[in-house]
Image (cartoon, rainbow, N blue to C red):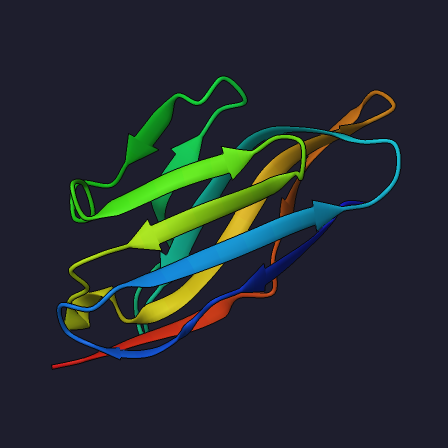
Length: 119
């Protein structure tokens, strides 16, 4: 199965920036949609941003104009540039993607990266 490895989380102050990265690895697969979701303590996991193979993006209203999702199809890597961070952005961020191997399509998830924004 495809494995996703995330990097780039951490602790920042409000107004600062962070960049998350997530690389997919494995054998004999193709990647479809790549995306980031997040889960804050006591809250449900929510979609933050997603990007298709053609580069079409979609954002949650709460992060639009502050976060930018991008991908490198040659490296099977997705990025999330987070600017003007707010304390309410504090959460564990998970990357995920749809992957197809042979004729089987499934969703793969990363291990999660903690992002903490202090006020």
